Image (spheres, helix red, strand yellow):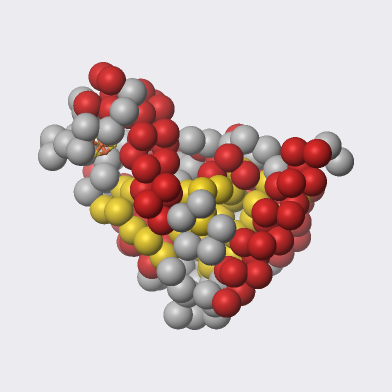
Length: 211
Ligand code: SF4
């Protein structure tokens, strides 16, 4: 284990203890391969799984493994038809598992997420039986304010490029606190506790993943 990984392991231990106080579970892995194997082993075959298009879920290789497995995948990105997409949204809310990342996680165990449409944070808050988060240690921040800053100034700009959003962060690379029609920060959600114990499971990986 490198010194960087060792420091990540210590930080993850601190955060996992704090997540437990907040009704959430946390796990730490040195690499994506071992983490995604553990996640797959925790999801019973035949389960329905949805996701919101997370770059971390994709980069970790989890989505590829899910597609190869015996699961019912509810994939919003499988169609561009508005009617079909509406139905997929409805099914996502009833899924056994919802896969996502978090824009930031504090040392105290709070989760910070921004969302434009709101479907991702809606499923985080309520609906799917289980929420599995894949979080690279690049998402760890000191506190909630740092998490919001990270989400708006470091997660949003590359996401704006990916989605070609006409926002200040697209043009300048930093948040302009916009009220534009393309705004990706209509919702800023801080999850400070899970009302259903163990519903949210955060899988930390000692790698840089997503935005
Ligand atoms: S410029 Fe707008 S969309 Fe971009 S991070 Fe700021 S509030 Fe969000």
